[in-house]
Figure (tube, rainbow over the protein chains, first blue to last red):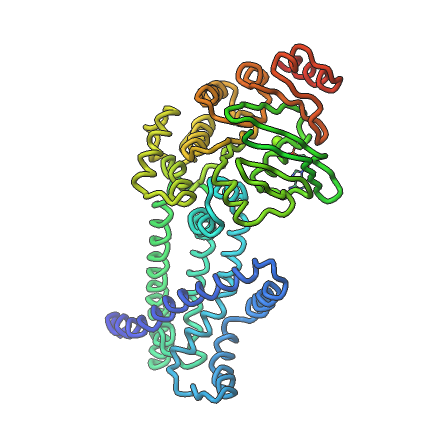
Length: 223
Length: 247
Ligand SMILES: Nc1ncnc2c1ncn2[C@@H]1O[C@H](COP(=O)(O)OP(=O)(O)O)[C@@H](O)[C@H]1O
Ligand SMILES: [Mg+2]
């Protein structure tokens, strides 16, 4: 088999992989921020609810999360009379990964927030900022910088997790590779998987480069 | 009279740290507070600007009467916007440059336009001799430089009163002088301030009034000569002679 055939087949699955990655990360971050915010509330009800969510989601294997989303979500929506069985598999894939990763990201945000030096907030208050400005100007940027290495690891983990969408029948890069290797009685298996590994590696390198550039922009900010 | 505290009490769990503090500060006065560590000096300053909330007591600041145990949100914000504080460990904003550290309070506390705030911040930075460091982050500055920026961050707000909490205690000995010089200059310009300090020479030279603080109480107060040369209270005498051995 020609190398070019392997590469074009794998690349045909790349958009699915990248779409899953980008959208899942964005939604997981949004949910994660919200849950972290709730978990940090003084209100016992909301922080308790957030903790329950975190416990449940973190305890669920990503593969199972995808299956639960794919088979469970339509049933859930049926209860309120909405038929979502025809939704694209991509939506279920993104939903499953977003929910799964939201818990990890939430913990990254929450622990980073808690490790911001308390004196920073007090200094903001005594120069006359209200708590909202103190949060957005001082606390949030420092939280983000502290959380950055954890977030990077989580994104890299998410890259690998996108390959799990085969369980709901989505053809991502990984799935395209396995299909191809099966077509040829497994003769070219090793070659195909080496190329596949290289493409994942390139994606991870790009992610590392992005995070390194963000960090370099704040070279002198030690938090 | 600019500031009057009446019978301030503060308890952490079952540890009573302030046992009924009465204190008045006149416009333009420099009050030094000395005393052993753990006696509640920091806690007193933190109650004045509501970083802690007292269990009981009241405060008159300018024309406002405030119940220290039940201040309203507006009273807290108003008080903070007319006071400033310099911390022992500087607490400069780590994600802001020297200039931004100083302009931040003007922009967000006083709703000043960014441009105007920046030019006032440059003047304040120049006064502490650090204009060339305006784009540096705290991590790139020495402790002494950070603390002088901390002072500029306070003065730029044009506050009625500045609270200093042992501003030189975290500094290497050779850097203490520059910070004290800035503070002395402020005092000469008529800035009202309360200074918690272990620098007896500063208290002696600059303060209009010295208070000896121990176990959550003001045990003795007077002008520098009275406290340093003719202390009446035994605890004051003990403290001063213990300090004298250190220096
Ligand atoms: N947030 C707090 N929670 C509990 N105890 C505190 C707190 N802040 C200060 N204290 C206690 O109050 C006492 C006085 O502390 P502090 O005001 O820092 O003294 P000083 O500044 O004179 O050294 C100490 O016993 C200290 O442990
Ligand atoms: Mg102290």
